[in-house]
Image 1 (tube, helix red, strand yellow):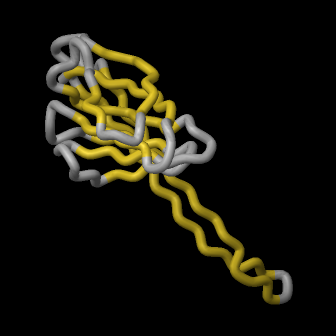
Image 2: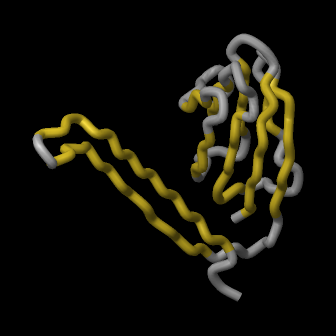
Length: 126
């Protein structure tokens, strides 16, 4: 079987900047893409984890070589940092933020900024 994984990303931004007469001037931005990929192992993991203010290594049981990882910060107040090397965080998820990315490492490191945060995680093995 082919194309077992479909990854879709969409970003839309619309901000009215001025109204001149009957013309509404706006700044618009729309980007969307879909990609289908072959996955050979069929392994996946879905979990929710509380992330504390001390760095934690994310354990992706049965997914040793993740192709894509989805992370959502479910906290309403606090931020979570994500990185692929200990102490080096390249992603900061504000409350409610999501990220979807192909990791360049097998391990992920997460750390809440000011208080524990609940995150939702999904990953698919390559």
